[in-house]
Image (cartoon, rainbow, N blue to C red; front, side):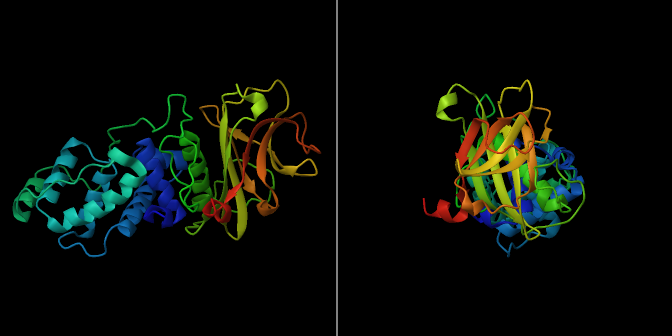
Length: 331
């Protein structure tokens, strides 16, 4: 398991969103309704956990500067100053190389190459002092195109679920689902509605929340021409199981809507509720407490329903097997 997988859920999700979507701290703060400083603090906390404890010549301010550079948060002048510092700091290069190696497992060539030794520390410090301060940079990363296929659904190099031993999520939808999970981790105030509902806006830090189950949703064989996909995550937070889901590509229904089921066969199906919100790209989103143990079910269904609280699943548009930590590790 990657060391990124072992990070607290809020820190790991911030790294994924910053690196895989090429967002800056301000943009991610707006997405998650957080202060820019909170996003930056979680990112720096993650990098500190990934790097070595000892780094001679690298104080907290320099560590933050190098962290911003590794995450693509500096403009050209600030990046030049940081590279000059690294060329002259053996301790800085050593710390940056360890962190960069971890980040490349997540973001590939979006992570910059660490420069070789180029000059002594004094010369590097003098060069850095003539450039704008980099520790507070909020400039967008140079590359802003998500690492997904042209239709937005590609599973190529998709981000990992934070606790499921390398199981792949589905490209851009996975990032959306991780963002919803991050709302749980950072802002959930306890939702008593068993049906999925819009993200909460109250604040309660839950850094130990973890993903316990994952479902990759695809059309059934009877709908092989349907261009739709989805991701469902179940996480444990505040001593509760919580479910988040994101789907895209479903045809707009003339009546009724799309809902979520836990399913093990005609005689064992549990209705969870309708998708309750939609983002500006047309993706359907849902979240809420999961009061029925997911361990008793084999898969998740997304169906079209004409009315609330149906007795049995309607027409199936997406389905996928439930992968928990235990059955993922077993293959």
